[in-house]
Amino acid sequence: MTVQRNYEREFVRTFFTSPTAVEGEDDSAKMLRSAAGLRGMRAADVWIPDNEDATAPSMRDEGVRNIIEVVAEHGADFPGEIHPRVVWHREDPSKRYDGLRYMMEIADPDNGAVDNIDGFVIPEVGDIDDWKKADEFFTIVESEHGLEEGSLSMSVIVESGEAEVALNRIRDEMGKPSNNLERMFMLVDGEVDYTKDMRAMTPTGELPEWPELRHNTSKGASAAGLVAVDGPYDNIRDVEGYRERMEANRAKGMTGIWSLTPEQVEVANTAPLPPRTGTWLLDVGDGAVELASEDGAEVYDGDEVSLSAEGDTYRLSIDGDDHELSEDELREVLLDRTSYVPSMDDIVESMEEFEAAKEAGKGAIAMTRSATLSIDGVEVDLSEDRMWDEATYQAAQTPITLFQDVYEHRPDQHEELEEMYGADVVERATSVGF
Image (cartoon, rainbow, N blue to C red; front, side, top):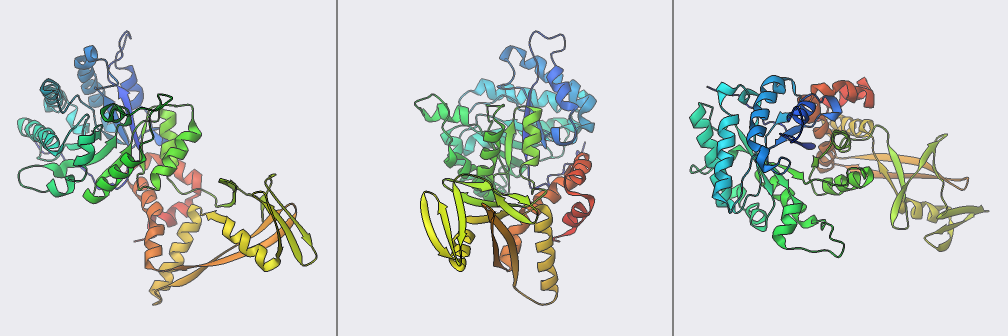
């Protein structure tokens, strides 16, 4: 039996876990059925029927049966990929055996679910030899059931110092004839168990942020051609904190994040995409303030900056300091303190302009961005040129590549994307950059 898989996608935005069996319910598979019915921006790129931490040990056998039933019935219509998480532990052979047993049952073609299963997630991995043990179990499952070798992808959750060290070795180990680690797909951070393994403590008892772990996971994924995913953000009501975490992650090259609710899925699906409209920011104090576009000007409406004009000079008060400036000096100060977040249309237009210049034989061109900044009713015209060359073009292409990846692999989101950006921008964004 041959199962065809497609792992061409470069990005995973959302990693959504669901308990496989809920104790005390008439239908213990209710959470699985609910997740299987999600569509559009509320449906994750990768859905994880979680037969490990999210499911009580006494319910895991039933959880496996629920996975098989729900995935066999609804999996073909689910718009993302399906990767059940099974039990495993680097120091516990009995858990590793249970993981093998569960994978063997879920992947049995006679049970009707494997055609809709893309792979499995292995938690609590240790050093690189432990990753190889898991890989060998995948190969056994595929061989036993007549599946194509490598057809089931393997993703791991980094929850120990050993696993973090292994991130530096995975690239060298993949491709050796003694393993099938080419099946690797996602590297996922599990900060809770990682904190326990590291014996880390904070005064409040809250988790450390572990920026080093996220950087190392992203680096390991980049080196090995894999996908990096951050761990869960437990405060599900803190939407702004969730957004800030994702923004910090993207600066490290980590687009994906664990999602605990469909609401978090929707936020995480949309946050990495370029904004619909561009925004000017003004640096004030310790942060940047978003300016409001009104009548062709970018307006600052706050108390931390004041500006007045007195003949040919200007008096600017900012960050507690007063400055008496000429018009040119004022422009320099404000240019240093302003930045622009480009919209999808802005990025596409800049890329199209550079592509046209390349076609005409030019290796670099100047792109001009201008705005009228208004503070206390005093307007200042700002303009700056940025040189675009091939390197700039490639860097700008990353958010467009993400959009194109989403558009190709999530047709259920096409309508929402067109509502967000407009049909013309979507059409141009899907064709630019080739």
